[in-house]
Image 1 (tube, rainbow, N blue to C red):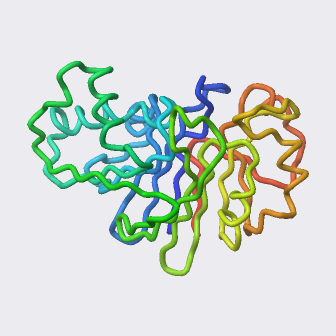
Image 2 (cartoon, rainbow, N blue to C red):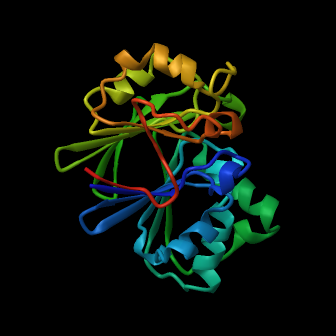
Length: 245
């Protein structure tokens, strides 16, 4: 399994980073995990063929994780002229949210006669799924239920496990999410400012021993976190980073 960090930024592009977007490759199948508002630009810059992606999987429905979906779909319809089926997966309500996002960005677009079949799949902690040949398990995160349910995911393929928190303050669900993973990509928005819906480094460090992943990589870093460049026990994600598991 190979994970490419297309976008590692926060909602505001702090540090010039793109919104959350990860390409996960498992054999011949490629999955896109989150597709924030800037993701089509990031995918173009990285030279990634969108028609090679079989599945879009979302952690929650904020614009910096979900907002790139309308442009992705319309580019597939009118530019790359996709014919391959597309699966759109995410928390409960993903189909309704997708249609709402399309209408908000491009009124009338939700009624398009798509040239490619679209299948919607809901994933919940009680209903795991297999997507693009990858076993996907959801965990409830603590972020913003207005944009949710908000979920983190464990992706397993070929004996390797990749875990991604999406956005979340500290929650005990991060412990089983991380347990035994080959890599955990975890949000760390601030350095020492404690927020109700995001994780700060001080809190993460206090719980670090509970996160049983082989590698812990910080992402979704805001200005305060980016301002601390001293060495840390954890790795820091960056746009273009590749994880070969």
